[in-house]
Length: 181
Image (tube, rainbow, N blue to C red; front, side, top):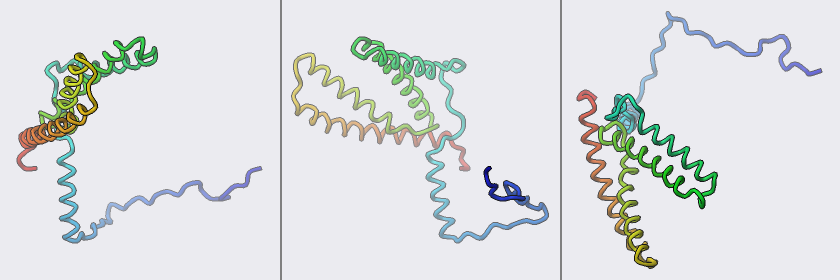
C-alpha cells in the first residue's frame, strides 16, 4: 500500500485573491533603470511587427503559403524516393519553397512590417555566385581560386545590398508607424 505524503491535508494550496479595496502601489523605479528599460523597449519595438501583415495582390487566395506547402511536399517526396532518381521533383520543390518564402519576406520588408534584411541581402550574392560558377562549369572545370575570388565579391555585394535594404526598410517603417510612437 502506498504511503500518503500529506495525510489529512489538501493536495494544492489556493492562491489568495486580492481584495479590491486594497490597492498596491508599484515600487518606485530608479531613474537610471527607467532610462535603460525605455531604451531596451525602444530597441525591441523597432524589431516587432507594426500593424497588420501587408496583403498580397491576390489577397483572398493564400498563394504564397500554398506554394510553400506544395513545394515542401514535393521536396519531401523527391527526397524519400531518392534524390538521384527524382532530382527534378526535389529541385522543383525546393525552388517553390524558395520563391514563396522570398515573396512573403520581400512584401513584409518593403512595406515596413518586419525586417528581413539579412535574408534578402544574401539572395543576390547567391544568384551571382551560382551564375558565375554555372557559366564556368559549362566551359570546363572551374579552378579552386575562383571560389576565393567570388567570396570577396559576394561579401561586397551582401554589404551593399544590406545597407540599401536596411535604409529602404527604415523609410517604410517610418511611413507605417504613427507619428506619436
